[in-house]
Length: 152
Image 1 (tube, rainbow, N blue to C red):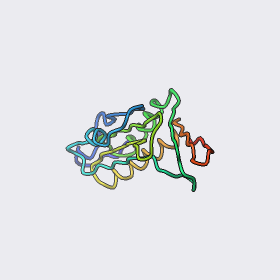
Image 2: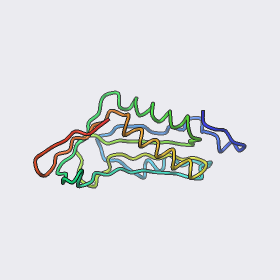
Image 3: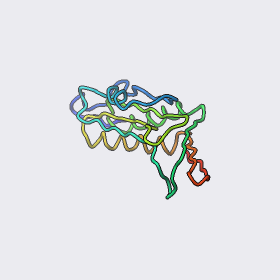
Image 4: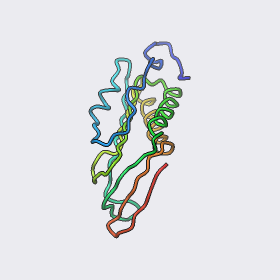
């Protein structure tokens, strides 16, 4: 259960999970940011993960994401853990699947909390747990012809 404080605005919101989705269309930082706005939030932390042009010293030529059908349910489980641990006012997370290019958004997550420290910590936990626990796999093809699967 999220900690309670003297001011009701510091308590967790009634329904803080605003968006959890896997999409095959481009993601929007603005959409996610807008969804976590809350009058009782003094801090919003947002993380946007982008496709980089290298990994492990090799040039990435192509990249694609795929997921298990349970991915959104697993996202919800992870989000609910974050909400239980922090005084989250609002939370949103979207992950892209399909073929992406260098610079494309692969994942966007955001959390609002009464204070900035809580928002940073909750956002960090959200993205770290999503990357480790949600069955989403990255297929990288390198410019030298080799390829690699990376995932939960």
